[in-house]
Image (cartoon, rainbow, N blue to C red; front, side, top):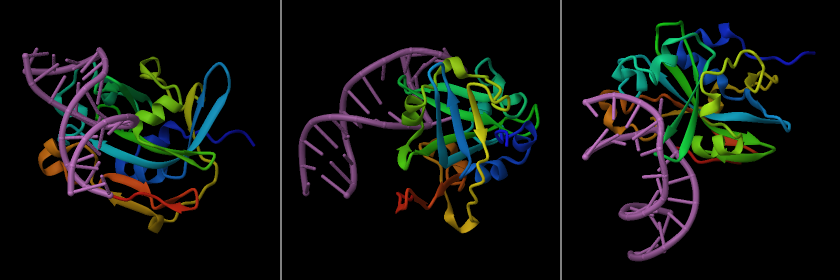
Length: 186
DNA sequence: GATAAGATCATCT
DNA sequence: GATGATCTTATCA
C-alpha cells in the first residue's frame, strides 16, 4: 500500500472540519537524513479576514498572501523573534484560512507547543509555501487511526485575547488522552 | 503550584 | 517604533 498522503481536496473543506479531522493524522517530515513522523494531538483553526486572530484579518500582504492561495500549502512564520509556527492553508483559494499545528506525539512522547514542534521537526522559513499534498519534505498522512469525536475537546485558542469576540471561539482542538495518559486540558 | 520576566526579529504603522 | 498563533527559567507562596 502506498502512503496515504492527504490531498488538496482534503484541505479544500470548511476549516473547522479539517482541523478536527487532522487530530490523529500524522505529520511527516523528511530531510536529507531521514524521516520523522508524529501523530497530531492539538491544532487551532484561523478562519477568514473577519477572524481578528487570523493574520489575514490585517489584509492581503506579502506575508499573508499564502493564506489566500490554494489549500494544502504550508504557512510557516517566525513568532516572538524565536519560534516558528507551522500552519496548513485550508478552504478554497481567495478565502484566507489555515490550521495551526500545536502539538504532536512522536514515539509516545508528547511534543507540546508549536515552537517546540517546529524545533523537533527542523521546520523553518525555508519550508514556507511548500505544497504539503506532494508528499515531499513535509506532508500529512492518514495512517488509519480512528479518533472518536468524544475524545476531542474544543477550547479557546491560545494568546489571542486581543481578538475581541473571536478570542473565545472554541477553535482549538485537542486529544483528551495521549500516550496512554490524560494530558493537559484548557 | 502559580505567576513574571526575558529572549529576540519579521512584519506592519 | 510597536507588537506578537511562544517557551524556558526564576522566584514566589
